[in-house]
Length: 199
Image 1 (tube, rainbow, N blue to C red):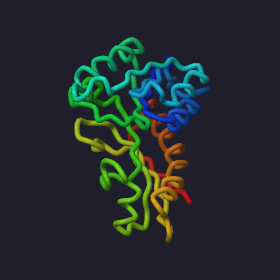
Image 2: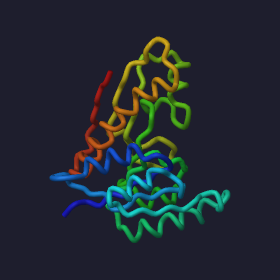
Image 3: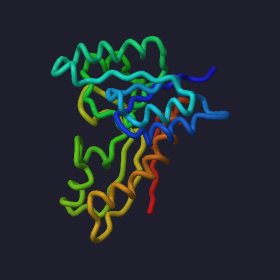
Image 4: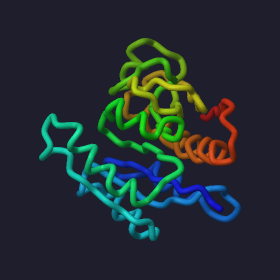
């Protein structure tokens, strides 16, 4: 019996596509839902084209009432009954109550070598700090932002003349390698650290 994976997105869903593409054949999991806080996210169309059920709830009408927004998010999740949740470019901070509901079953990918550069603008911050390498991290989600046990990291060099945009373009293909690899391992019961390196 395959594990059920819900994937949460906010935009183009490139990591969602990489995850969904990987969950075929002998893979121990299958996508059961793609959920977004942005009804216009192009990733929703990609998910539908792949035959994955979708749902979307615009967070903006809820203002600062995070609990009401998360209550709406929970409805399709409860219907989909996921074993794992993969945050893939989901640009909303989830409350501790929401995260605790899925404790140990929620993953996230973050575009830095955590614990460095939690939050936004990670590539610009790595360049400004003079770092010689950057990358991405897959971690278990906890109530603390971009915290939680690290399950995988992929590293790329920071090159002379790099901008945030050129560095992001080098990191993204590594995200598409790392996240599916970690998801497969977690779905198989393996939470040991995976490390990758790229150009």
